[in-house]
Image (tube, rainbow, N blue to C red; front, side, top):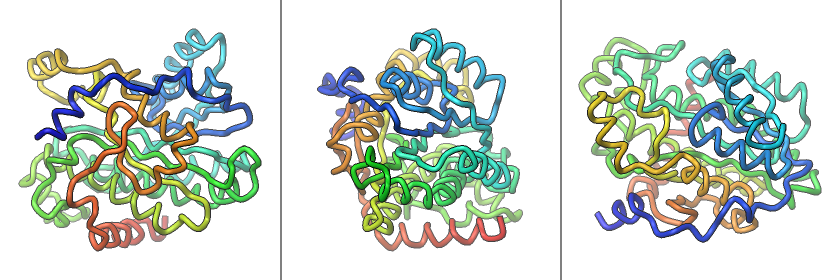
Length: 318
């Protein structure tokens, strides 16, 4: 309980965006960069001269975000990359488009997410919308970009031997169902759909956020010797578009206890841009810019390996 309280009402951050070093020459992708924490992350990166790709599903929402970012950064604009994380074909197309334009990728912020929609909502490929988007989608996007990340780590003078993958999780990681992941909810057949309905949207969200942590930890373990640094984090309790699926009254009451999205960007920017981020591989970070712990399931190596194997299996042929 103390851990959750400390993250809900964190001490003042010792890190500020002004401390971010100059990022001239660095290429960075932010998924879900069109809203909330992602938009604030793009703003800070642009202000420090990074070349930023704003990856999002909706071009109209991305265009609106780009106009806002230009007004906040003296005219600096990210590049729109169309990416629907709930569609494996779209993910491959986005990765290929990026690789056709860039030879380097210094930091990948896997920031996008879906929170507590109706359990009836599925991805284009038939998966639970939350796990399919938050975990499977980001796994596929990351693995398609891994050759570029590894090349950057080994060859870019700006990389100092590393490329970083920053995975946005949530405090929901402490509210996962028994066993961490209800495997019966993950597939695409009718039995999986029924299992997902029985499990409920809150637990489905929580297990997807544990999935982010397990994926991050396994990525860190598998690719450490190739210069990949992978961390995961709880951005904090924030006022963002993620609450759009919640009941109106609950959303209003919850809003009294939430921080502005700019606070939520702090922890991932700290890990993605600062020298101390080189020590964050396999770590879970908490508000604001602190190292924490994601709970017992996050340390289960067998669970992480099982998840990686399942993810690998799903993207075969895509």
